[in-house]
Image (cartoon, rainbow, N blue to C red; front, side, top):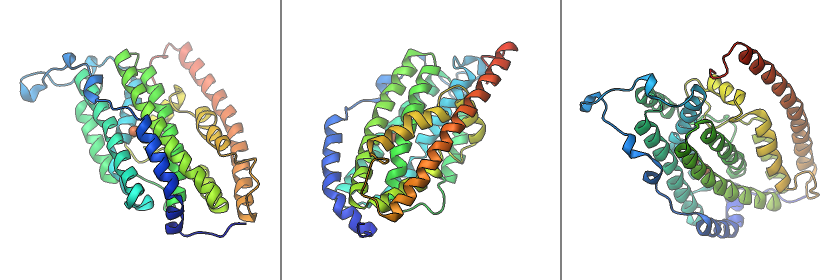
Amino acid sequence: MTKALTQLEILTELEPVAEQTLNRHLSMAKEWHPHDYVPWNEGRNFAAMGGKDWEPEQSRLSEVAKVAMVTNLLTEDNLPSYHREIAENFSQDGVWGTWVGRWTAEENRHGIAIRDYLVVTRGVDPVALEQARMIHMTNGAQSPEDWGGFLENVAYVTFQELATRVSHRNTGKVCEDPVADRLLQRIATDENLHMIFYRTLCGAGLDLVPDQAMESITRILTNFVMPGAGMPNFRRNGVIMAKHGIYDLRQHLDDVVNPVLKHWNIFERNDFGPEGEKARDELAAFVDKLAVDVVKFEEQRDRLLARQAAKGQLQST
Ligand SMILES: [Fe+2]
Ligand SMILES: [Fe+2]
C-alpha cells in the first residue's frame, strides 16, 4: 500500500508527466478558425438594424437538432465555471497554469463557433438562446458539494471531455447539414485531445497513489452528471437527446466509461490496498448495474419510438 499524498505533493510529483503531456498536446493540436466554419453568406440583419427578426420557420434544424445544439452551446458557454474549478484544483503554477490557460482558450473557440453558426443560419431563436445563456452562466456549473481536489477533478474531466466528444459528434449528424457536421466534428476532435490529456494525468495519478485515485474515480462515476446540469430544461432536453441517440446510457457505458476504465487497466491492477480494492468493488457493482439499466432503457426507448412512429410523430421530439 502506498502512502497517501497531499494535493500539493500529487501536483508536484505529476509535474513532469504534465509537461510531457502538454508538449504532446501542443504538437497534436491543429490551429483552426471559427470563421472558416460558418456560412456567412446566409447571414442577414435582424429588425434592430432594418432586417427581420427570427421566426421559427427560418430554421432548417429539427427539434432534436435544436435541443442538442443549444445544450452543447450552453455547456461551452459555461466555461468560466469550469475554468475556475480547474484553475483551483490544478493550480495556476508552472506547467499546470500553462495547461489551464491553453485549455480555456481552446474551449472558448467552441462556443464562439457554434453561436456564430446558429445566429447566421437562424437555426434557433437568438433571444431565447441569449436568455438561456444568462441564466446558465449566472447559476454556474453545478457539481456535487463534496467534489474537490485534483484527483476528483481530473477523473471528472476525463469522462466529461469524452462525453462531450460523443455528444458533439452525434449532434453534428442530427443537424443534417454538412456545414454543421464539419464544425462539430472539428470541435469533437479538440474534445478528444482534451480527454487524452486528462486521461493521461489521471492514469499517472493511479500509478502514483492508486488508492486515492481509485476512490476518486469511483466517487466521480457513481455520481456522474453531464456538464450541462442546471441549464434551463436540462432534464427534458437530456431525455430528448437520449431518446434520439445523441447521448444515452448505452453510449455513456460503451463509449465513455468502459473504454477509459480499460485504458487504465482498472480491473486488472494489483497495486491497490484495502481502500482501493473496496472502491474498485464498488465501481464494478456500479458498472454491472449500469449494464442492466442500459438494456432496460433501450427496451423502453424502442417501445416509445415505435408508438410515436405508428402515430406519425417520428420527426417530433
Ligand atoms: Fe468544448
Ligand atoms: Fe474540451
